[in-house]
Image (cartoon, rainbow, N blue to C red):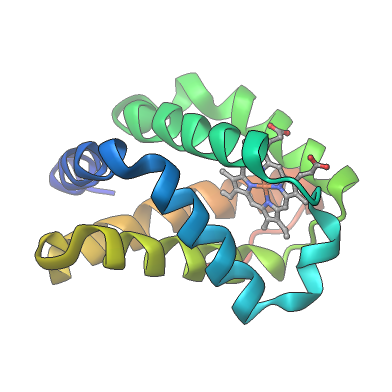
Length: 141
Ligand code: HEM
């Protein structure tokens, strides 16, 4: 990611923060629509899950400029996901639902540059998590 892309992700995320709860609802609705098979992996009540997801995204987004500081946490998150049943091939699906949510949430703010920047950010994070959890990097959206 270029420094400009880091800035674009961080700036656009501040616009999603006020609608974080709504965005998280949209994200899981979208995820379960495109990948109904993963629904059973999640708890029935997603209230806590939504909060954790948005809190983690916020930490990740803020840490993008200083990637190495969050690698241990991202590695631990990846390992926990193995026990949740997550597979490498789920990561692009989750990424697709995340980008879709951001597109809807940002409206006109979802420019091609912002889309590219988020795509790069998710590819970086998910590529790292996949290699930590499964030992081989894979292309992610
Ligand atoms: C970069 C991508 C991802 C991020 C940032 C992320 C973030 C999180 C966070 C913060 C939690 C809360 C629990 C914890 O911290 O361990 C969580 C739980 C969970 N995630 Fe993810 N996740 C990602 C990708 C995925 C993928 C690809 C799957 C596969 C379907 C997945 C499935 C789950 C499940 C099933 C749980 C909850 C389990 C439970 O509470 O029983 N996640 N995720």
